[in-house]
Length: 111
Image 1 (cartoon, rainbow, N blue to C red):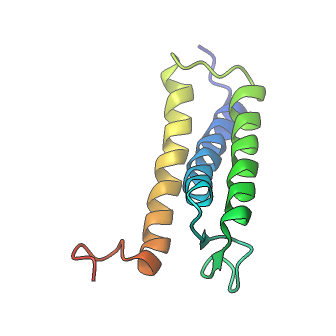
Image 2 (cartoon, rainbow, N blue to C red):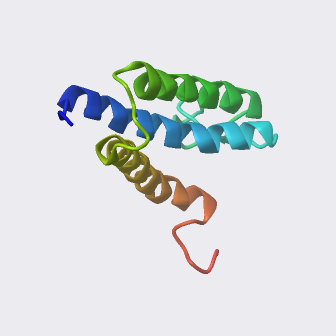
């Protein structure tokens, strides 16, 4: 398999956008407010559930474009899955640390 670095970078960011889509979309369809870039202050305040559904869906569209329309993503190619998985893991860890302080996630006792 020929390693195409621009494609692997696209898959990395596709995984990151997919990871970002999940909490926004789930919070939105659950009817709960959640942090978003459109809140005041951005990324700290809460946006409505409608805004989060829209933001989550946009992230899902970008993830689709990067994973399915850029190159030929192969679920059996460890390089492709690894790049997307690394993007998901890195963004997931960054988001957990960043937003955990707002939702009690950085304190194991929940206080």
